[in-house]
Length: 178
Image (cartoon, rainbow, N blue to C red; front, side):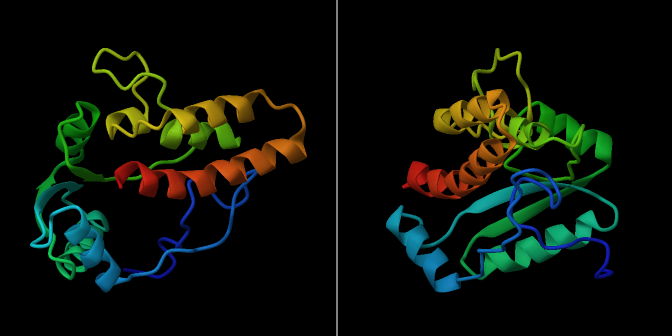
């Protein structure tokens, strides 16, 4: 893959957006991954499917993810399809993992926060079918924080709220799954 195609950015707010954090705190730790799997009774790993578009660079990204997960004992079955098929399964919540791309609708942090962490109704009957809903990412605290940040009129305070939401999304996801 060409190094200029994508840039490592480990937060949900794009660089340049109000409240974006430009730190990359994550690193590969296979021993810790194996220990966490053992802690939840999956010491022998498990199998998961990844829906992925069957063209560049998505296939290459999926193969890299597959190889990395295999190091911890997670077996990945790649399900390559055309974009219409993968999107259809993703939008119907009929996927395990979906590799796709996202871009903000407008240059405001709420555009991404609403997509990635806001999920006011995780039921199948929800009329809010954003990315968080599609992935059953249901953490009410993040929805509340996103709503509060949207309503905040002080720009500096609003930026701090989005920074806090990013930190919580990492922390909350860990505590939610433990």
